[in-house]
Image 1 (cartoon, helix red, strand yellow):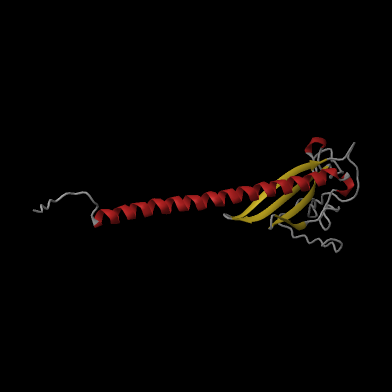
Image 2 (image 1 turned 90 degrees about the vertical axis):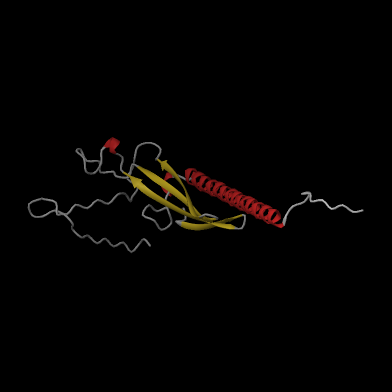
Amino acid sequence: MLIFSRTTKGFSLVEIMISIAILSIVMLAIFNLIIFVVKITKDNGMRLTATAIANQKMEYVRSLPYSSVGTISGMVSGVIPNDENVVRNNITYRVITTVKYVDDAYDGTISTTPKDLRTNDYKNVAVTVTYYGPFGNKDITAFSIIAPKGIESDIGGGTLIITVIDAKNQPIQGASVNIVNNLLS
């Protein structure tokens, strides 16, 4: 004689569907977390490489004689390329170097009394490395001050300051000045 009894030793179809749905949500979250961690790791590696490139370029600038510190076609003339591409690990990094003269207030400026007629006290160098990472464009910038050995000198170049005045020696506000130098690009 066979006896049938109702026991609950298995899963119903509804329980299996709910379990699959919960498991799918958890797996999707873990998968997205893994993708995010990989992107962060790649971005950190690219940032580290960009920092190394900026430091390398800045060390190159520091190794130059003071008279050579400047960009090829910049306002402060020198031997450093203004804009160049560097490829590391099959990734292109754009390196932009700017060099500017600084008229330090310590020894007076052109607009103080007494006037400091030598407005190129030292040079301010900025090296910016740009790359396109997983989270968009990123920039790393390194700054340095390059000072001449000894006292400042008039090596050519400098800061251009223009004051426009009227017949009564009063400054004219909003004057339009156009300066052309065909020697620089």
